[in-house]
Image 1 (spheres, rainbow, N blue to C red):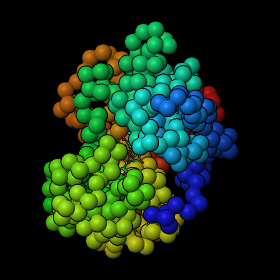
Image 2 (image 1 turned 180 degrees about the horizontal axis):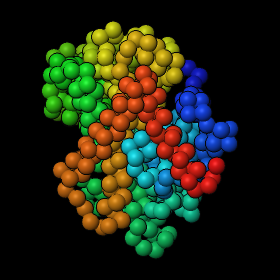
Image 3 (image 1 turned 135 degrees about the vertical axis):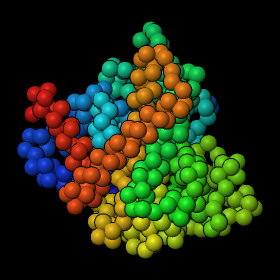
Length: 430
Ligand code: NAD
């Protein structure tokens, strides 16, 4: 993994992707300068009294990139390497993601520089409550609706909701999504992102005329997105031969391989709440342990990066096996623009993050709708609506890509940016 951690800035990457689209759409300078930067950003301190009595100050962020199409929406990440630029990039990607699946929301993202592995539940609760206290006037069901992301869970969302409701004196379940089912959460939300990734893989394979039963996949990550992507992919007949994850004890990543297919139930049974697989128990269960970046070099048809950004980059792209036909970006920003060019030249069908992992925000939107009505749908209803929305978006992007002879990423960006620009124009902003 060390190679992939070279100097890299996600926000510059997000801006480069936007610039390419702006050029293709021949956008005026005023529109470009509005959309290249966030509308609003908040950076703040969160002092927390730790369990040992000392006070530690954490840095928190919320960035609202654009809300022309509706209240902004985006997760909150707890990560030791979190930075304002990462949050800016993720907020911009959220704007495009909501637009490409055509849900009436804008884009935002939040984060806290911290490592929950080293924090007790009470300390994490204090960070959640402190984060809300710092942005309470700038978020809310009609302004900006947070959600979980890397290393944040339904429990974190509930603490945040409770703080928001305590300050505002009422019940506002539409303030946040990713809440526990039974506490204004939506059935199907935990599966939504991973399942959504597989809906897009299914459509891509259909277009290529490849039966899913004939395919094998390798996955980076074994958290929320990865586990549910593996679950549905296996259910429809695919074989996953390798998964990789971060090992907190070793402070390194490892890949776990089983050529006849990983057993999801076994792996889940030896995985912690952060998506870290217990290495010795994996070895005992017959898994081959490889270096973390080996997931990328497997002899498979499909790669699903579902961990962090910038994993397939100029240094690693040439390790991708010649057999790989599809890369479905479960993570946000896993492929750098230079690697993307190489993959396009090689004819790899890349399903871009803004489309592939849009199932999460689409289901979050469904959760928001249900929370605002205070009426909840069945799991089948949620996942059925999700499949429909994702499939429609996939077909629209794929049709445009085919008609322009462009990549799926270019087509998805053209559709998304055009919709956001139109909303800004309609509002008279530009
Ligand atoms: P998670 O915290 O549940 O899991 C993250 C996984 O990545 C863990 O298994 C962890 O061990 C692994 N990981 C971390 N660093 C790694 C490394 N260096 N090498 C290999 N594995 C590593 O997070 P998640 O919710 O599954 O999110 C994963 C990605 O998907 C992120 O990019 C996130 O922004 C994106 N995403 C998540 C959602 C969602 O609904 N959860 C929606 C859209 C996009």
